[in-house]
Image 1 (cartoon, rainbow, N blue to C red):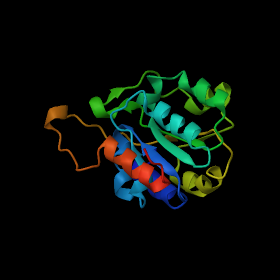
Image 2 (image 1 turned 45 degrees about the vertical axis):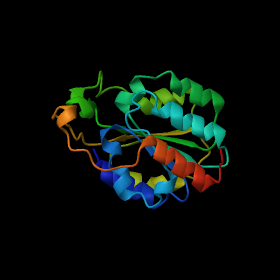
Image 3 (image 1 turned 60 degrees about the horizontal axis):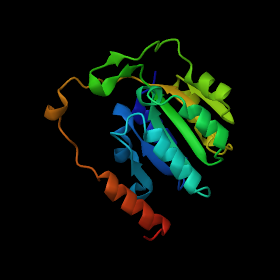
Image 4 (image 1 turned 30 degrees about the vertical axis):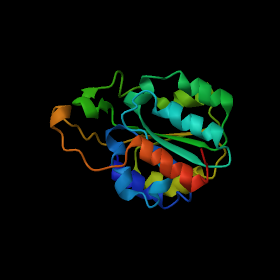
Length: 195
């Protein structure tokens, strides 16, 4: 298993000008690593729908590389989307699953069949153009650059350490961040999209 921050740091070196969204407990680290916040889209809090949002962005902006850091808990809530993504074949969509085998945000409850389920296998059988699996950081670092040059849709499953949050949601320390509306406005300005 790998620390999510190491995944984000390795990815950042190959990001280029990709539009990036991150969800799940591990996704909160991305804003501290990203070097182009105007091309980051906040999709936290959209459990079960974050992939749909980023996939829609990829369809709407076919000339932009779109990378979505997903969580397995979120993906399981809308698993049929794998078939939809595969069927639409967005060449610019990169779906990276950070799998910590738990619902870390809500107390660390285990995800059903966490140790045996093969998300990359599911994406492959659904029809993604390319799929990859990693549980070793060096292997991920060695391959992420070439993976980001593949034709999508691409699915990457990475086993990460769980960072379980047990404090009640109302008692958690909230880190300052841009709202979803602010990130959308910043992205639109970055891309030159007017009202």
